[in-house]
Length: 265
Image (tube, rainbow, N blue to C red; front, side):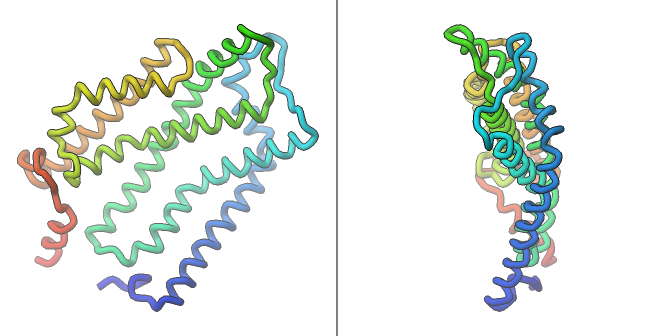
């Protein structure tokens, strides 16, 4: 039987939860303070992919007296939360981890690591490819009907939200992997429906790339297809290694129960 929060009295559970929440809150506050003093550098980094799209000789403007503080604080807290996300996830898992069986625990760390890596890959991909093309299109559309006033807070907020959105979207391989490995959606079902899935991915790629450039669309579509195919390839290796090829078409696989039986033996 596991020893830890699963067997604690209620008040000990609450004390453990409060301790971990305190760690999370203090960490985010400290990271926010550090990031606040680093915001001039962070703003330069965030402005870099947008600047080429601005009219020649123009620069960003701030239209309110408290705009400088609100921009710096907003960026600091957003970046701090993103940077602390692995630690936050770990604190949540650490609270529940002692209550899990050994065969369940071994999925936790790889899942957290994979989710973290995929998120930051999505953020970097968006920063490098989507942000420049997206803002070029948006500013171009604005200039067709008037003069664009590049308000710093508006542009930076959109950019950060785009990067977070792409980071979340890049969790697709992890979702596909677990759906297939646990036979919620069998591997063969993904393969049989590949035409529909590819079309859906094309539609999604066209929807989330804000410009009309086929180059940007192809970049996004290629990235999503690559992630999807890699996830299925890894899934096939895992399932075949554990069950043989018959497991690829199973209706539902009680992975954890099988592991528990092996542990009992």
